Image (cartoon, rainbow, N blue to C red; front, side, top):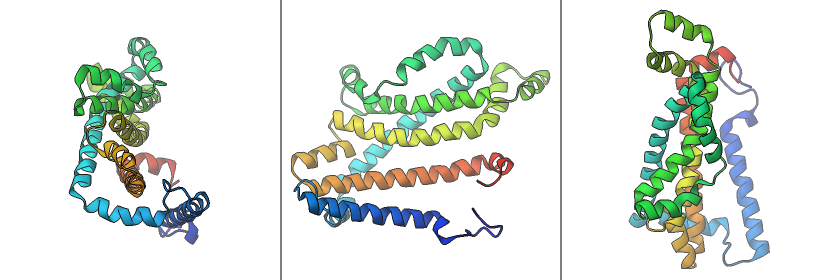
Length: 263
């Protein structure tokens, strides 16, 4: 809980303290497990951190990371452009719900990486197949939260907009979308993590380039420290992306947070 001055009441409530403690605990457990098991394929955290310095300065590895981030961003944007309007329409139109809900129900539990072999047959091993499967993985949580947000919009707002002469499309984007934005942003935040997971999975299956290919190539060559260093890079990327998106979410929905009170 924060005090009125903006400072934390207790030192251990600061988010940075939690991050530091979690990293230290993970490092200790990792080091102990590496010593006890004694596997050559399970180096300790010091070896992985040493390799991490070479990994982030290697042009080939950096290019692989940038390629993966580019595909992740493209698939994420595709998903938002498709899932947000469809989720809002499903939440406000019974006909749209009846048409698309069975398809969404079928696609939701399906592992998206399992579609990679089919997409590879259709579109080849290039970036399009990976971007497409990333977009599918992100679309479903964004669509679900967009639908939930649209369902919770007060009907009075829609009636007022309708009485002012707004058509269905104008009401959807000028009334329903702003009112449902807090819920939509939750789905978008989940989608960031999903995009990272599906991106790595797709690159492990279609091994040509990217971080997934770097992981498997390093494992095939018994460069185990590089494998764990790449995993650390992915963990840091996921943490940073999630933290940045949470900042963006709080900024865009600050009016909703102020109505609920500072959590």
